[in-house]
Length: 221
Ligand SMILES: NC(=O)c1ccc[n+]([C@@H]2O[C@H](COP(=O)([O-])OP(=O)(O)OC[C@H]3O[C@@H](n4cnc5c(N)ncnc54)[C@H](OP(=O)(O)O)[C@@H]3O)[C@@H](O)[C@H]2O)c1
Image (tube, rainbow, N blue to C red; front, side, top):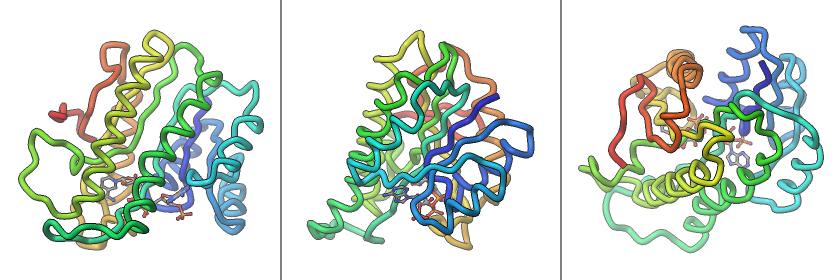
C-alpha cells in the first residue's frame, strides 16, 4: 500500500506516518523544517518539503511526485489561531494566517493530487467538528470554526470533481492530546489515528463527500 501524509512533522500527521509504516506501507510524508524532514526519513518515510501557505512550495511538490500513485492520502496541516471566547474580531494577520493555512493551503495542495489517484484512492482531510454548523452550540474559536467550515466546502467540491476516481471524506479526529488539542484533551493521538485508519480502510464509493467522526458516526455539516 502507498500512503501520502501531508503535514506530518508532529501531532496527528506524525502518528499516521508511524502507524502506516508499522503496517508495512510505503509512506511519503511532508514537513517544513529540515529537522522534521530528517526525522521522517529516519523513520523510513520518503520526506518532502511542503509549506502549504507558499505557492512555490506547493508547485515544487507536484513535480517531485510526478508519476506517483497513492492508495491513501491524508491531509493534516492546520493552525487554530486566536483562542477567542466570543465575537472578538480577529486581526487581519490572524485571519490571513488561519485562512491561508487551513483553507487556501488545501485549495492549492489538493488539486495537485489529481494525477496521483489510482481509481480507488481514499482521501481524508482532517477537519473538525468545530466547523460543523448544524450541531454548533459554542462560538469559541470562531475564526478556526469558520476556516474548518470552509475546508469542509473545499472537501465537498473535491468529492464532486473526483467522484468515481477517489473517495474523499472530511474527518473529525476527536479532541486529541496534541500541541493543538492540549494535554487535557479526551483522546490519545495513537487511539484517534488508529480509529481514523480503520475508518479510512473501510470507506467505499458510497462514503464519497461525507463528514465523519473518528469513530465512524456521521456528522451533520
Ligand atoms: N488535536 C485536536 O484535538 C484536533 C481536533 C480537531 C481537528 N484537528 C485538526 O487535525 C489536524 C492536525 O492537528 P494536530 O492536533 O496534529 O495539531 P498540531 O500538533 O498542532 O500539528 C499541526 C500540524 O500542521 C502543520 N502545519 C501548520 N501550518 C503548516 C503549513 N503552513 N504548511 C504545512 N504544514 C503546516 C504543522 O507543521 P509544523 O510542525 O511545521 O508547524 C503540524 O505538522 C489539524 O488540521 C487540526 O485542525 C485537531
